[in-house]
Amino acid sequence: MKPADMVRETPYVKSGDDVPNIGSNQQFETAIKPLNNPNDISEPMQIKGGFAVAMLVDKKEPRIPEFDEVKARLASIENRHKVLDQKDANKPSLRRTSASSDKTGDSKSDDDRPTLKRRDDSSN
Image 1: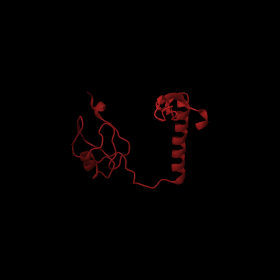
Image 2: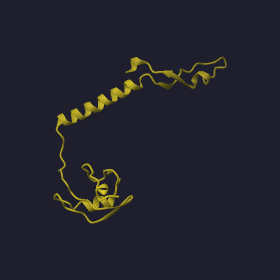
Image 3: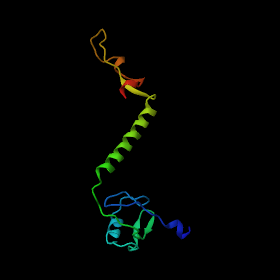
Image 4: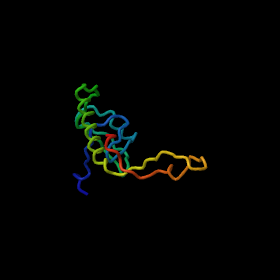
């Protein structure tokens, strides 16, 4: 393995984040906490699959996002859900049929079992 293959850049992380290729790791968090300036290097630490030495590339201070940022993110999520819902509209789903009483007065009949039916397009 070449040294360049061993370098992994992570996205911005905060305490408790699940870091790609590392996971949620208390040793990793403890090792990167004292890194304050670009190019600061941590002590070696054990991670799943081996060891790591972290180097700070950039640091962003936590902040409260602006309303328009949150609004745009939520609109994007909602649009993605609409697209997925439209793709799933023609897939069959399990639904219970209404229970009907048979001659013995027992409401538990074959009609009370889940049945496979197409989704109604008017529910979107």
